[in-house]
Length: 527
Ligand code: ADP
Ligand code: ZN
View 1 (spheres, rainbow, N blue to C red):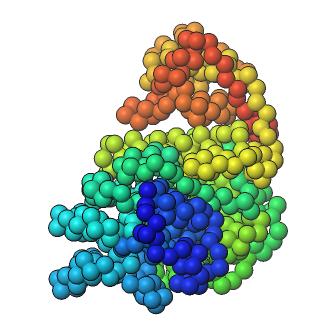
View 2 (cartoon, rainbow, N blue to C red):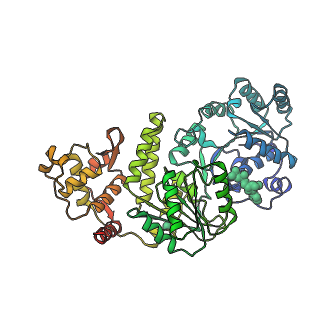
View 3 (cartoon, rainbow, N blue to C red):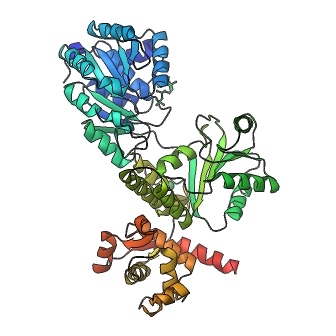
């Protein structure tokens, strides 16, 4: 516990007198109380929620200097400039400083004449610097250790930085110093990793909810028609963003929308700077434009009245999806996050992971993130709850997502699941969904006949469902973790231990019927 003489000011006073704000926002008070009590914690807050004050205020309230680890020199300089204007004694140690400047910073530190010191991770972990910190700590001159962008410490995060790993040792050496790790994005494995590596008993997370955004996810069957219907059902003249995976699809979709009478512009990294800037500028300044874009669009775009964000393809994980959909409705007015996806998206994203240059363990992590995303897409429960849980937060069924507004009916899918799983086993767990479904449907094509799979007991036992319906069942079994697509074997469907147990122990499963019913209608309609 921190002796009271180590507290030199109260958080509320500092907030008002130094920063000029009236009240803390969201979880700031909770975090600051925790640090003031000498507790260490991991803090998750969305971008713009005010993470910096969470360490700046207690650094000024507790005796000694607050050490802030930050990976980006530009952001450091920014914060320091702002703090100095407010009269805070802040400085940084990074690779951009001269030897003399660094020595001056060391002198100030020893003299106890700094409130906040920003330091790059690779600097912090140098033995002479760690030694200095230990010396300061013995003299009670370290107020706290704050680690910004803390997800960088974890391979499970989306921006792993090896130099962050060393922070574990530094943290361990600073006994009694409250440590505060802050980040805007961390799924559960990343959170756990941060907490373990930095020995942080407490997790404080909230503020991720965007209650004015309605989440809708549908199955892709005729994307253009679906998109047109979505747009036609919305009031005319709204600004919106439509995300596509490829540059080609961006251009095609934008051109098609213009033909259809919409004001659409394309944006992707393949265009000249001048085109990109012009289109971005128009989107921000004019109203009622639809930007069709790849992920290259959106960083730093602060247009408050984007009324919808539509995804024609699945982004690569929940983090990306949440960031992109989060560009809708910054003004707090009702807005829509709409997405359609299909098996082909999952296959494509898995292929992209396979082909990437990333090391194998990184690929495993990305595949796991994709599986979590698929589970979100296939959920029969409140989408907002699934999203918030992903970021360590919670909510009751929200009443403002497609699954809350139109709860999917479920049916006993035990027999369907048994048929599909048996067929995967009988064909030797060596084939993709299309092949397995063809066997179930009794489509005796050449591949199937040449392997004798038309003789299997599972051949032609699935006639009660269409191909599209079997695809829906396959997706749900993938999302439920009963099967997985093995990417070392060209995406062959294989059983998981859970899938084996499902068959062996004669377990039951509920499947969403609306998808099945809808797709049946679509298929009949198409004929
Ligand atoms: P983050 O790091 O979480 O993205 P910042 O710490 O940069 O967010 O804060 C975002 C903005 O909100 C800043 O301009 C900051 O001054 C402001 N802000 C933070 N906390 C408060 C508060 N309690 N009252 C008013 N403004 C605040
Ligand atoms: Zn809901």
